[in-house]
Image (tube, rainbow, N blue to C red; front, side, top):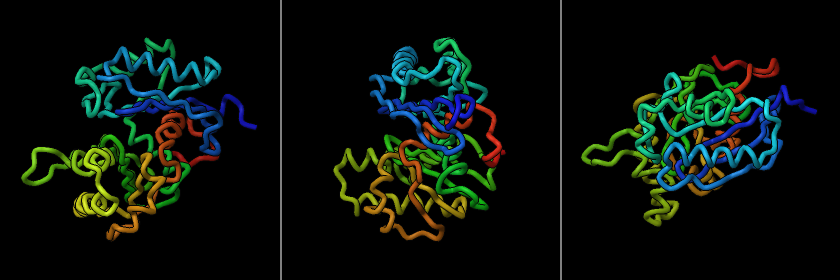
Amino acid sequence: MATNASRAIGVDIGGTGIKAGIVDLEAGELVSDRIKVATPAGAEPADVLTAVHQVIERLEAPADMPLGVAFPAIVKGGRTLSAANVSATWVGFEAEKFFEDGLSRGIHFANDADVAGIAEVRYGAAKDVEGLVILTTLGTGIGSAMIYDGVLVPNSELGHLQRAGHKKDAEHFAAYSAMEREELSWEKWAKRLQWYYDYVEFLFSPDLIVVGGGVSKHSENFLPLLKLRAPIVPAKHRNNAGIIGSASLAVPVPEALPAVK
């Protein structure tokens, strides 16, 4: 049985929901219920912090259990440098320190799609894959993680690729939220995804594309409609990848896992 030393809490803050769980770091699996609350309207820092308190308290984990927090923004040196689908207050905000002070504990703080990519490399669909893996999360927006031979290239933000002749970016056109907002069929949405992944392939020539986010549980409805050079597969951990990845970065890598350089 895993001990607290091989477990950590992962918190995944998204544009519509905040999720948390306790993760077994050897197996890469949740060993608790997944706790979820809605992201507060406006997603201002104080309100988000309150919601994070709520999900952590409901886990009833030991106070000294390591904690990782994932956030939907460019993260450098503990600062959030962008604010997609959250309040503009987060731009240039000392977010890591804010959470550490507010939670009265040290944390590991990182971009949400990056930690989802780490989860898939360590425990999921991208494990032992050589070359360039690009993970995309299709949800409120489009998050991305780029990993080359186990090395994460952070803050890739491929959801903000620009569409020629349009003011709105790729995620406004092709995220799962666009399908819901415009009531698109799977086939019509897949045509938008085809444009997006063609663009990604043209720019980066990945060896594998992994598709995460909650909609990945319905991957049979849209992935077979896409025609790409690279294999494209659903994420193993689907919408839990952010929880698992953020938890896995909160402590030193167990010997059973390959290090992500």
